[in-house]
Image 1 (spheres, helix red, strand yellow):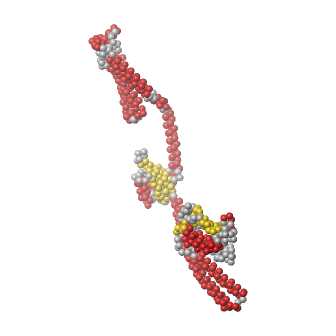
Image 2 (cartoon, rainbow, N blue to C red):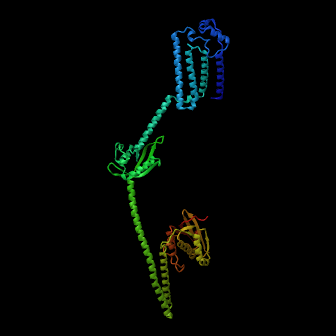
Image 3 (cartoon, rainbow, N blue to C red):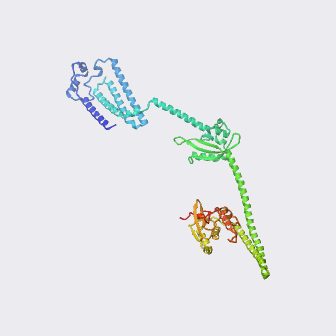
Length: 566
């Protein structure tokens, strides 16, 4: 209610109150000649006393006759008024009682004030009708006037209170509209139920509603097909009956945990026994449906047939076991073969070196004994024989060195600081670096994971290779480093003679030389050993043209042990 409405209501109420007090206490008017019968009935003494005093009590009835005595009332007409007023009073009293009970039950606070006004208004109206009936014997017209005043005040307040409710009432939908909404929602509910039923019945996995005691309450077609039972047969049994005995305890333990609220749902692989006694493996997922009060209603079970997938998984596992056994057998054979090869290489190198020493010794002894008897051609033959045995000895030692790469059980997972390794190698090659007048440039190198002695040999072979195959220009060697994922990428660059791209793979083969040994000494095994060591560390190595297309760049990857220093 707005402020203006409140003010108007208060003013109207005050005006009615003043009018009521004035009317209830006003003295009786002088009696005219036409009211002689009423005066005679009321008593001349009472009327005269009230008129002389000038004031009257609201309960004073001396100035008014009974209603039966005022006018010529036929008895049936009088009782018609009396009976009607009493019935109206009784009805007006019953209606507020029902509204009061409604308020207590519903507690609709937004409309409580208006309903209380209605209760007061209806009670006042009913009491007024009761007084109207009583005036036939008790002419308390002053009280009747006060009641009518109260009824007027309450009715006015009720009317004012209803004003702001009218727009809201106009927005209320009609019963026909509500019925249409209910009908549409009923249809939508039916459609939703139909979709749900179709989804339930046509699902590609088994779905069931299961009672708290394990009985089947509702099952779909897929579950029936999976278990070999009809729907009617399943609905008269429980899941315990068709669960494999070896899986029942585990299933019941999970059911108990869900009922106690320790878990919300569970999944497990279990076996069911079909009607034809065949075993069905299933992946079971169970959850519990509860009502709005949290009480358990029934379980919802999703059953997926995994019999074929388990058989396939078992077959794959068997194949995997067979493959592992074969790998283990071949690994053992390869290990024995490697051991035998290393032993052969060691024995062969030892046994081959002894005859070479004998040949070399006897050739040199022959040269000393013959002395001046040898001509130039003979001395040249002896020199060829000595050089050949020396080269053969070098090849045998190189073969032995290559066979020993990776021999034994040396760990390849230690942290190796490449900066320290390069420092050691440059110290060993300091004389060669100084002789070549080489300039060595290097980036900060990372720590890698591997065998320190083998990685030292890799760095030494690559730097020695750059020193051997230098050109006429002052030699410049650069060591670069970067990271790619979990690997360190190292590059050794030089501006030497370089390698033809068509021979990029050949240089890593054992005993393969692109330059005659007379020009560059060596057995042609250094890069082969380098590639073997890098491969054993899980890395790779390749060769490409150096900076500006001059010289060579050897690029190799090794597993990082730590981040590259910033």
